[in-house]
Image 1 (cartoon, rainbow, N blue to C red):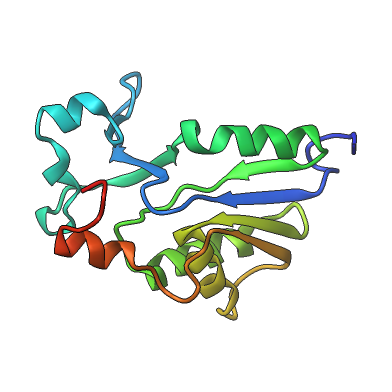
Image 2: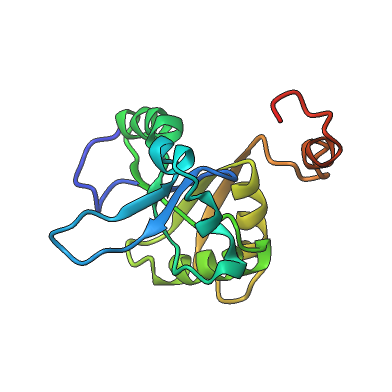
Amino acid sequence: RRTGTKDSLPHVLVIPGILGSQLGLRRRRPLPDDVLWVDPLDIQNGRLPLLDPAVGTPVVPLGVVLFSYLRLKLYLRVRGFAVTLYPYDWRLGIEAAAAALAKALRNHDAGPVSIVAHSMGGLVSRAALALPEAGRVERAVLLGTPNLGALAPLQALRGTYPVV
């Protein structure tokens, strides 16, 4: 177990998978941001179409879905890592999300960073690391990343996916 200040600990950036970032609308303070994904009331009230990029709603990533990623963050923190959860707009293509991640890595001023990425976050990470403007990354750990593709989207479109 490592000890020290947040700046002296090794840095880990956790990149969630698809649907793993909260998306919503920024509001002026003191109002809280308006989370659309994932908000059960917004789903029930039919507000999910606001997430469609074609609608033109100024949706932004507001944070990571803590239910899915807080345990990983705490696990790494207890083991002596400074952990940052990196939300991104999973509605965008891999290339656009990768460009934003590469910029964030380049602007990371606390030295080298390691990446722990889940699912689509692994694809975004790999694409970002291939860009020349990506910052210094010591290592990347990919958890459940569909490096060879995924069957689930096709099953969902055909109506054979067990959840849809």
